[in-house]
Amino acid sequence: MIDPSELNTRSEALRDEIVGHRRALHARPELAWKEIETSRYIEEKLRALGCVNVKRGFKGTGSGVVADIVGGAGPLVALRADIDALPLTEETGLPFASAVPGTMHACGHDGHAAMLLGAAKLLTEMKERLSGSVRLIFQPAEESGYDSGAEAMIAEGVLEGVAAIGGLHLWSPLPSGKLGWRRGACMASADIWKATVRGKGGHGSAPQETIDPTVAIAHIITMLQTIASRETDPRESVVVSIGRVEAGTAPNIIPESALLVGNVRTTSRRARETVEERIRGIIGGVSAALRCATTVQYDRVYPVNVNDDAALDALRAAAEAALGAENVEEMPIVMGSEDFSSYGEKVPSAFAMLGVGDAAKGTDRPHHSPRFDIDEDVLCRGAAVLAGFALTVMERAQR
Ligand SMILES: [Zn+2]
Ligand SMILES: [Zn+2]
Image 1 (cartoon, rainbow, N blue to C red):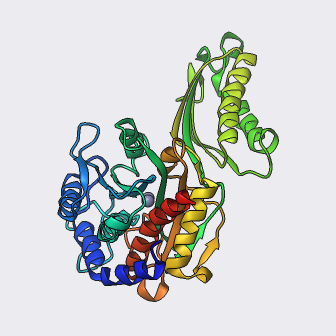
Image 2 (cartoon, rainbow, N blue to C red):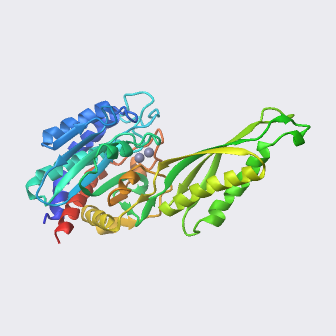
Image 3 (tube, rainbow, N blue to C red):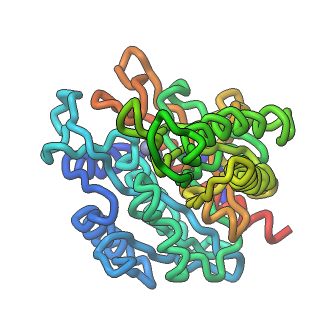
């Protein structure tokens, strides 16, 4: 049994080192699947710590790092940080601001990587006493949507043998030093779809000679509103939005085809299935009723991020030890999405938000803003939470 206060003391001692990692990574941001220097930096630190099974480079790139800390017999616990930046020009004016025009760590992933490097050091220092092993996953391409880094790393085996996985997201809407958790679904799924409705074009004065796809999409748009209101459980949140509508070119032409593009957010795996099925059904059915043909392309982007009860309890216990029980609180579901959810589809997972919002420090600005910044004082605590999660899972497995 490792005393949580030991973890706190040790993590405090790493404060400057962890902040140093964050600033080094912040100054050299790299976009999804281009995190080569970031990954080299991380690899070098992990090798210096004596981590084993170090692998850098996934999906045929040099991006992404995985490494293990091997302790005693017991479960293998994975900890994950994402490492990619965003296509944005930084406007913080920080001395260590991005040196790369048009690229910025504006979501806090620099802090995620720094915290996980900190946790790696904490756990390495107590390796002889670990009743299990730790897998460190530094994941590329969280922000890219289509080309998810989590999916790619899972496909290359990073979850093999893993008993549970934990992760944190630094979160500016939450006050500094607080941890927000949620049982079950904690972040929404995100899917996008595109429907082409084909009729028969012709002269606007002779509708009887045509099959008008514009009228069909008008009905489809209205009918899709019944999914959230009539087809899904009112206790769950569902969003079906239509973001793009295209039909026609001139007042006197009935077009051949029309296009709808939309996105879907759900907060349960079941609702996600239902919504896709109903979108396809309504588009196909309404089109058929109006003699149109359709093709629907439905792309599942990120699953619902669902916390496993036991894994979440371990993360909460670690957070209470590192932050104080009064700073660990339940929070509402976040309707944004995260590809951490893909790990949760395979193994028990826990994900929570670690507050970095402090108006006095200017760290309460929204994620993805060019003036986004994080409260660095939180980073060593985050490292203690991550390390503590791994220790708690191991200790509970022994009982
Ligand atoms: Zn983001
Ligand atoms: Zn993020």
